[in-house]
Length: 494
Image 1 (cartoon, helix red, strand yellow):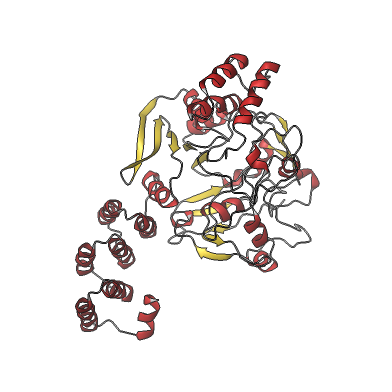
Image 2 (cartoon, helix red, strand yellow):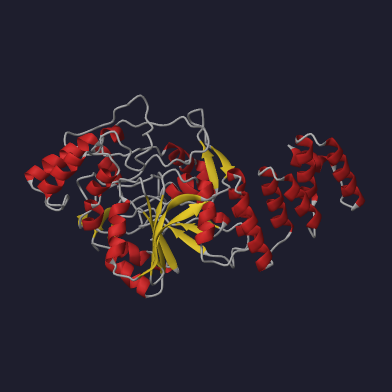
């Protein structure tokens, strides 16, 4: 068995900083989903010409800014992972966990994860009612006919009410109820008469948004009235054949990862072994054989593993109502009562902390990647270095989050980890926030300056029309012995 796992090293000191293992689940879906569409080191610009590769741009909010990250294709048969023993493709929860055990870390984060059929499935109807997607009358009728148990052996009248709810929700994007589903003139895909997913999921194509391709416009979900059960799990192609394809668009990843040059560069196995990379595979026969995950959460947290369970509060696929219910059912003492958490003085979600380092957190819809990067830093219980702090500055800059920048500056001073790289990043932040006075004060106090420091200030004054200041700074640069090379100045000024 060979499990493919590209390792993305931290852009700083990888030997001393944390390691994150990323698993996409599915089951049967490649972790290159996260690499390409979510938090990998690159943004992928969709090519305008068919048959050409996407352009790669550095992602300033990559998780590799704050950690080493391993993208593991698991189990064997998924992505570029494979086995010479066909029996390895007959797998399930337990076998996958055993095969991945060598990667076990010190804590874990789970986002909108399927955990327990009772909580997850029964959280949907209260969620859509609370969000105003169904009327009070439909909610009360459904609750009464289903006795509050919407997906566990429903009776005929209950099923009729659930079909009515489905009809109301048929054009809703279940991954963000505020977002549209991106489609191509309502292009039809194969459907079946018993399809139970909303209509909008069966009419999807591609968006023409050129850059960056970061919006997750696909996902693997179970039909709203068919929760995950023990036994064989439908594969992605099987769901596709039934028309149950929610917001699908994996063209960029598929074209890039199946290119011969790319495969050679990332050291995949030969095409004779894995002929084609697929986002989600039908190479495996997967059994959901462990049932509810709640017991495992109790065991892990009791052993000292930290856990952050987070939910997007506008995600209908695995709604926060179910996740909030099962995290509460753990029976742990509340040590941090329900409260908002803030990004740039704005509520970004709500959180509740329990004993044993167990935390539940919601994330408001439309929280940007920049805000996420800042908040992840504030929540991470790791010793930061200069690269971590510089990455947070890069997130603060487009938000013009001067207050956060000053706070991180103070943190750096306290930890005595400031150097010219740190100062240059802070200088850039002050300039982006329009605080030229703070930028100048910092520049004067810098213990060491390099050509980037000087050039940043010169170009800023030039762009603002402060010609006399440009000449003054340039003369000071020469007097302090900084070697001036026109080519270098032009490079930083381009």
